[in-house]
Image (cartoon, rainbow, N blue to C red; front, side, top):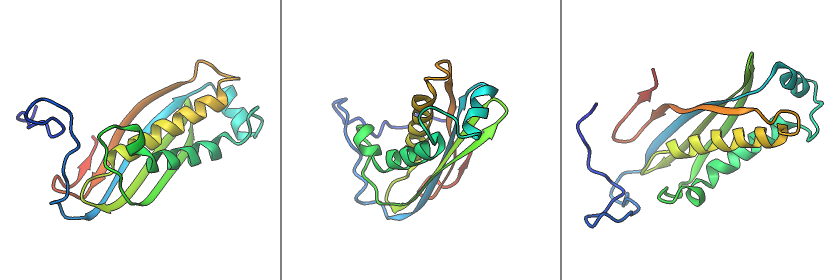
Length: 159
């Protein structure tokens, strides 16, 4: 466990605050997050065959994830509004569900980890919403940051 760091989102009186990043240089930054929606093989077959009741669930989830990345500061109270230069959501069929991967980029004084994570979660929630009529037991799992680049802390890759 690393040494305890100063809490940057808490002021000297213990109140929440948005960190001042105005003195930090704008640099190229990127982040990738992943998660998975666990569903049955029967549900996967319906999606592949385009026979789900609500239509193209994959297209809706991709668009929702990208929109969520752009709206992250509206959802996460202390997140900075950032000019995103790129946002993508990739959905891949796996044996036990749909893998969700979001990659977000910017040139800004702070990172885009929250944007990538938010994109994954909202894409997963959209998949669930569009599939709940056929599988209420679907589960969004394993949401995590898998990579980030740029900024003072440099590169990160999940093990």
